[in-house]
Length: 181
Image (cartoon, rainbow, N blue to C red; front, side, top):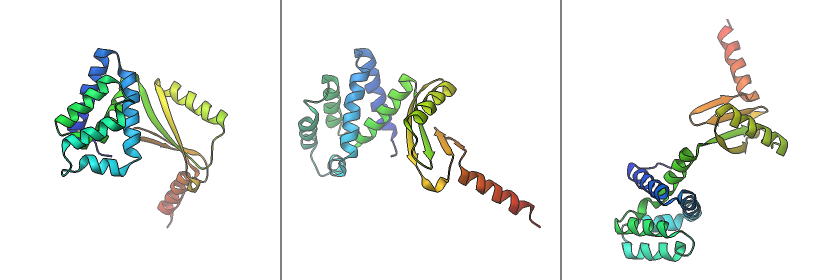
């Protein structure tokens, strides 16, 4: 999902508000709820983005969905977005807030691709090793891709460390083709 500059500015303002009120984690829970709700309902996202729907109706729906589930500061923030006619970027704001929180808390997202499911002990060992190597808290996501044949690929931000059998075979093939007469 592309996050606009406006969404990043709103998310930055929200995290600064959380710091001032000592509610960063509470707002994180709220924004996670909002993000997951929007991720699970394409209809809601389309409703919020629709220029035809009045902002009062959008605000009423947001209040109905979240008023009893989120902190007062988050409720005020949602009302601000509605007043400014910016609820169309709420999904992006929630995603940007989650990213900013990870930066604030020193958490990095790491994605690992493996050919088959890791055992719990392997996953814990990998998690611990990644935290030691990066010096940060790691939010680990493990995905299975059977086409890899074996090994693993680790993606941290824009860096990929590819130690898969599939990759090694591709490198070997390229070397053989380069030396062929």
